[in-house]
Image 1 (tube, one colour):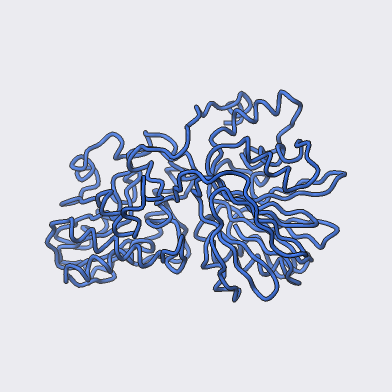
Image 2 (cartoon, rainbow, N blue to C red):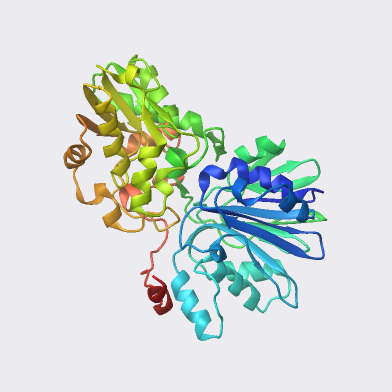
Length: 457
């Protein structure tokens, strides 16, 4: 997500901000802008460049804007954010990352009270709760809505008059504030500020709400901060290496993950290579620690997206074949140590190991810079069942056999926390590690589809 208030070319700044955040979602993109009187939005399937051109950006006039790149979920342009709603009392646009774990219960309650939903997103649940609130001020309406939802959310709300941002009480998804000139901006990652020349100010705190309007920036709380639980996969996989989260640089964290992995693994090899892009930093750290040379054993096609966030297994399989190519002269006749950030379904790892061996590698040793993912995520990562996780039902040795590796090593939970720099910071060290440990920072609701959802599926 990206938002900005008080800039004469808000839509174009948002466009650039979304470019920096493109790695977080490639299924769709949208921008909503306000000129203080009216609000207008444009959205569509595909990458930011696919959705917007100069003509469309020129049509989005205003000094306040929010934008969103879509990660995954139900197909359909109606589900692409920001969601924009018009009413006689004014317009409202919302962007939201994360997942509301009680969304289905709230949908059912709202429908019983007369609400009609136009999308399959839990973001629309927030919109209905905000509009149905009996409070007069928007900030109070948002507070009231957030008091009813559970789960993970970084939220941006835009109206003709103001921009409101909020972070869930556990701080599960990253969100920060910046400033460019006299305009305030907000982004899911700090790398978005570099492109537009903005200055990073600070992270949004768990349970905090910030109101930005023509009078400036006003800070409030809508909830007492819960147990801090930033998603560990942000450091391992999701975020860009040039971003900082909670004062920790992502590249540095991943390099340290690789160093710690080298200390825990007992593998002999001739060359270390990383799986582009998120594992390159870890592979460099691994190579530095062991003294084994780092080489580009795998080359990425820059015009193919991330296979982990493809919506179907068939597309993931095809994506791996299109995305990566082995460098034969680097791996041929060598014992290759392949460093990757995680194994989710095992599809990608199996294909890469096969490619490296077909290119002449005599051995392929897979080293993973995170622990086995044994539990589903209910907070926004697209692995919501145990069946999707190979480590949930297979031992490390069984996974090794399935992916065809000569050895397989996962980083320990303790080693991961130490490498990131979160060791010794209280329970769970301020991190959500539920996918590795099964300890969820919030209560979990049964996710029962509503009847109309079954029909649509």
